[in-house]
Length: 218
Image (tube, rainbow, N blue to C red; front, side, top):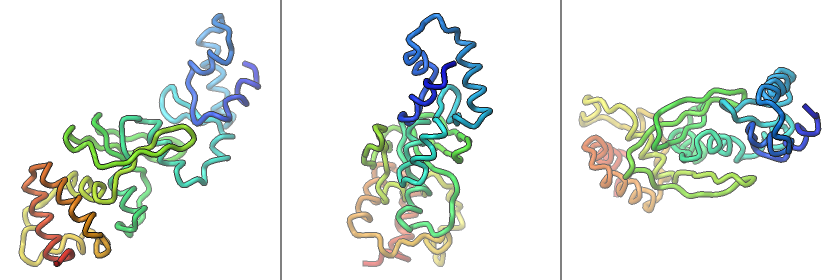
């Protein structure tokens, strides 16, 4: 396989076998030949496998790895029908003070985890009527969906187990989970409450009541 094929892929955020076929412009090249080249490139550290059939060149990785939207871009490539949320967004907005190491997202597809050389990417399933509350930006041609901080907080609490003993009068949810919610704006609080109304979840009603008693006092 010609080395210039690999270098021509350096400008792409990711590539597939189909992309290599297009660059070769030679339909007679056997799939096995391409697979062998991919294996050799991976072994030599020239490419990184993001998931089965999806790759990134080492050169592209080195050029963009420090960019703030690099990890979100990888998440969007792994499952395009997803939005960044949960711990990842809460940490970016200083709501979660503890370090987290995975990039977390929400999807209508099944819950799953991808682990590759770029990190761990987790995806949690949510029902259709709650698949909202995010904005879409673009980075290097890849659309990236990012939850608002209110939606990230909702997803984080909605997808957690809520134990009955947390309904006690003295329980402080924000303190227990080390959530920095004092600076949550009134607009964010209203948005958070709106998602609870949509969810029709008794658990989330109890959570909102707790937060209004302990943090969001008016």
